[in-house]
Length: 89
Image (cartoon, rainbow, N blue to C red; front, side):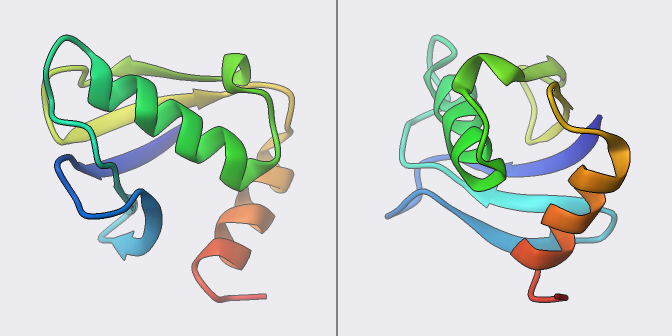
């Protein structure tokens, strides 16, 4: 599970970097009828190289701060990929 700080209504959808202990992710969709959450799941799935069904918002569906479950990748794999996304290595 990872913490995500969402930024709905952005110009483009992308992983932006770190925001405290969260991964900052921008999505183009407005936060209406779950569209931003669905797009957030898609952006993260693509970033982690997983199918969209492997990424699910499990907490914070109506707030910017979210907990996201990533299936199909072990904890170390998630940490490694997050470091790559954040420019670590």
